Image 1: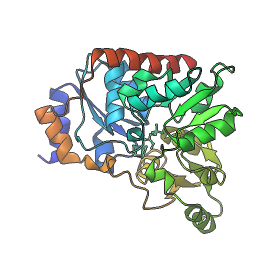
Image 2: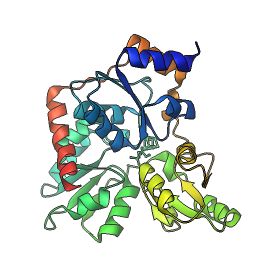
Image 3: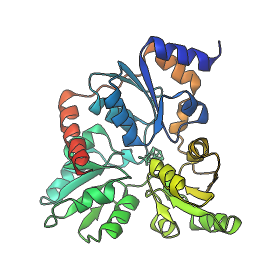
Length: 302
Ligand code: 13P
Ligand code: SF4
C-alpha cells in the first residue's frame, strides 16, 4: 500500500476530516476532503462535526478550526507551520494600542493568533474585510490589524480616512510580488485578466482586474468569459485553479511566491499525524470564548 492509500484508509478508520488550504502541495490537496480558503475551511469543520480534524495549513487556521469546533480533536501535521504575517502582532501589542486609541474599534484579519482574536472587537477575512469595516460605527476610528496592504485596500475601497494601520504587518510572499513581474506577464499574455490577493501591495492591486481571496479567485475565473488569468498570490494556487477549471489557463505571476511554512507539510507528515495523532491544537477555554466572539461578530455581518 502506498502512502496515499494508507492515509485514505486511516482517515476512514479514525473518522478524520482532512482540510487543506489552497496553498498546500498538490499531493496534499489531492487527499483532502475539502480544499479552500482559511475561513471556508473552518466553517466546513464546524458544520461537519468530525471527531478529528487534520488541518493542512498554518497554525492560525488550525486554531480557528478549534475555536469554531471545540469538541473536535484538531491536529496539525507540522509545528513549523506558522504564518509570518500573523506573527507580526501579539496580544500585548493590541493591549498597548487600546491605550493609544481608546475609542477605536479593533479589527483583526483572521491571519492572527487566537490570543489576538481574543483582544479585538471583530475579525475579518480577505473575502469580507471591506464589508466588515463598512458595517462598523462611523463615529469611532478603526484600528486594522495586522496586514498593512489589506488595510490600505480597505481604506481605499471603503472611503474611510480614519483607519489606523499596523506598519509592521505584511506577508513576505505577497509583499515581494513586483510590478515588473505583473507587467512582464501582461506582455506575455495580453489577453489575460490579472487577479490579485489583497495582501499584495497597492501598486499590484492597481494593475489588477480583480482583487480576491484565494477562493474568490476561483469564483471570479469561473464566472469570467476570459480564458487566461495571471495569478498574483502564492504559487500553489495555480494548481487549485487548474484542478477546478481545466478548460482555462492560469499563469503564476512569479515562481518565487512561495509560502515556506505551508510547504512544511507533506504526505509523510500527514500520515504520521493520522497514525500518532500529533500535533494537537489546544487553546485555553477563555481564549476560545473571547476569540469566538470576534469571529461570530464577523459572521453576523455576512
Ligand atoms: P485566504 O483566506 O484568501 O485563503 O488567505 C489566507 C492567506 O494566508 C493568504 O496569504
Ligand atoms: Fe501567512 Fe503569507 Fe503564508 Fe498566507 S502566504 S499563510 S499570510 S505567510
